Image (cartoon, rainbow, N blue to C red; front, side, top):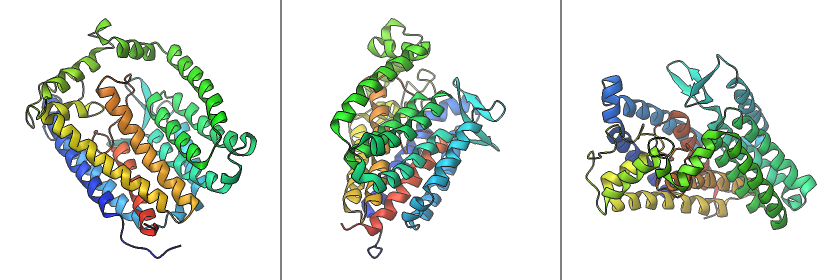
Length: 365
């Protein structure tokens, strides 16, 4: 393995800038709601600062661990995450929020096992693909077993149910398998099966069908399933080129529900306008570009697939979240990396960046 060097500076800077923007926007988006509910305008941002602190410490620690460590313990990490997915389904252990049993309480806080399953699956699949890269073009020994593990995890996540997190995990794994060299014919067949299964999942739950109909025509139910997307567009529209000004959002005054979470980009666009939104997308683009560069320069296949998985996970979440907020995709309940309020998601993303930084220390570029 090549001699270690300094971690990728641009990845570090882009990540810290995204975190800084996120802290400012979490406070701006949540202050009104936090004052009303908790009599403390800083309630959410203080907790987010704590999550960020833990995440940054974890990122710095993981950055110093050779990424081969994750290969050696991939199976153990995956089994632990499977065990957590089982625990979260047990009444009295798993906590129900928004109709999904997706959280396990830890003192005054809670963790979301499905978020960590995404990370565990990337670690395990990178090991699997690096060992079977030569047979990935065969279904029996390559593609089939890899997808089988992924869809077992997806099925357990859907028992909560959490279609958004499951979709990100499956999408990330599909990108990794594609990069590994799987045959396009296999993808075409599985894609048709996947579309059929996705349609069945939507049809099996009325609330998911309402999300699709509200995506196609939110005004068909403006006070119900179409409410969030309408209010989100009402936020983005007045933002214009330069925005209404930081802290001047109107939609955060009880129009857009809990704007500090999935729809935080709408508040950012309202307050900072097209310029602010473009700056945020530039930061994400820098992070993803450098991540791809790290993947291309990794000294071995495991490092390449691991970096690809982390980059794909971040990219897919960004695309889906902003797609939902701008009305281009149905509502899925997926957070915006580094910006949305939430401990499990933020910690996971920073851990992933820590792994990416370690790979960059061994990169040929």
